[in-house]
Image (spheres, rainbow, N blue to C red):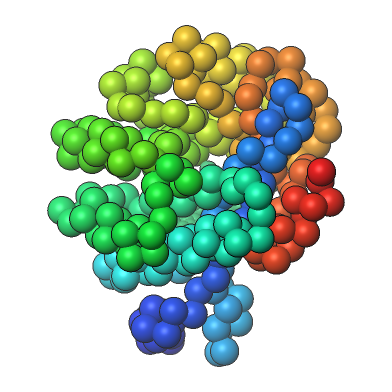
Length: 254
Ligand code: G
Ligand code: G
Ligand code: MN
Ligand code: NA
């Protein structure tokens, strides 16, 4: 299989890059963070979407070395930002369930951060509901350790799993990211708006901050602001972009 061969080669040669998408505070429209999203362009396959190669990497176990590449690239990006800027934004990293539930996940993360002399305080980890609900005992133990190391923890794609918020609260979570599928119709379907409203209220009662994902329109920003949402991520403000462009975006944004 071409994909298999090329993916193995890419891992060996560290052929991936990261794009970064800003997270914007609704309170004052400042950039308060950035999410790292993996990108891969291959000589023969061209641009391959992570929506395609990540599921394949998860099936084959290649996700583990690939995720380690992502951690290293995120550390490298952080070091570059630290050189170029006065105050550095936290970088959010997407965590694969398969990687997270490996027995040496924590040790590997520690080793990488130590090797780069990076502090977990400057990073966030994004895990889906499914990841943490999958093996609750393993999850809670690891999340507490990661939290103690200094990472901020987010639940990604919230609303697409099967868990209730009150159940999730047993985990030490900082942020809840409401899935794009709710935001998409928030201004046109009353039920979607009601659900988002309820999620925001409950998250706040449970001391979590809320990020809306996939925001593309001004009407959505206005409505989310009215509903008390804390942060926005989406094409309305910016698409994921290479680090150079991201730095330029920050300059322009000021
Ligand atoms: O970046 P989008 O632009 O296309 O990403 C598609 C999917 O791939 C999303 O579900 C996103 O969370 C996931 N994804 C992107 N980058 C990474 C990564 O570095 N690691 C993992 N595990 N998933 C990622
Ligand atoms: O699963 P996760 O939420 O990590 O993945 C985020 C995905 O959403 C990435 O593929 C990213 O490129 C994409 N994305 C970010 N903002 C928007 C947006 O405003 N609209 C759409 N359609 N996709 C977005
Ligand atoms: Mn994410
Ligand atoms: Na998401």
